[in-house]
Length: 378
Image (cartoon, rainbow, N blue to C red; front, side, top):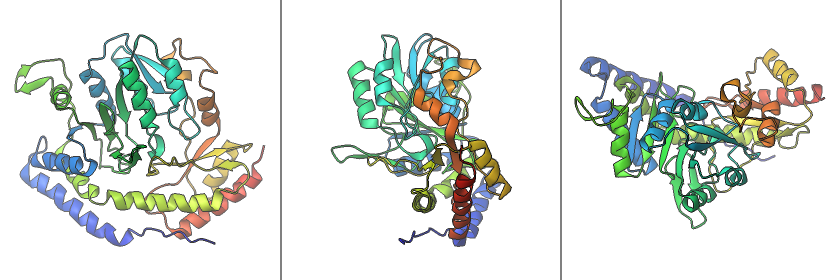
């Protein structure tokens, strides 16, 4: 049997904790809780890590998506193509701005379907929002080609994929969130790069767009008290920046630990009847924000209860597709419109995934999953 080289970070946690505490205390001592040097330092470090020209820290990932759509000048009635299999924020901000979210299907790798995008384009289409779901990049080479052909904006939702990279057919590698016109991420505590509260950021290589985004995020100001446009109030506070500055240094290690855990799951579960392990796209690295199984002829609720009784938490992302949610009823919201999404919503289950999983825990989890699969066939 091939062995999986686990990544042990436990010895570093006290050191990281000390660094985080020191950074937080620096902020408290300075009493500069907003727009401090800590925020600027983190911004520059994240720009260097991603290889992107501009990082604009904001209040959360949802704000990042909304501000991006505002900065691109999208107008009420414009259509924005979004996957139906994702968290609601992606569509929510479009609806709040009076835009029309056009829900399209995903492939069984959980990312937006290129063919579905092509079929959804109309004269009203202005933007595509590919979501790099669960930690793996969508087919960006094909999506960028579509955007160029039809003169569409690309807003990458990289809220679950920070630290992953996409390789183009010519060998170029780019960081997740840094390939389209603008990219968005979240620093919610459960993310691969998470803070101690809410936080987010916007990425772009466009100087003019970056200036507009900064203005919108700051009440529409460039010069204090001079409001050039309608804006919002969205900023990353200094304490969260201090936390993120430390954790960014260890992001590659965190992601490696998740990848090792995913390799263990793959090895133990890939031959099990009734389960399909996550697909790995050869063009993208996968940072496994979630490790999500597709169940085949398995009673999902019973399996989840089985695991819960064994002390193993599991989650269903996402039980109701966006195109079937009450809040988003329009011409694109009909049962059968997104068959892969509807199938996935009925049969996916995400196993524990975090940086502290060790071989003993993973062995127990996979043992109980195997027993649960056998006991809960339909």
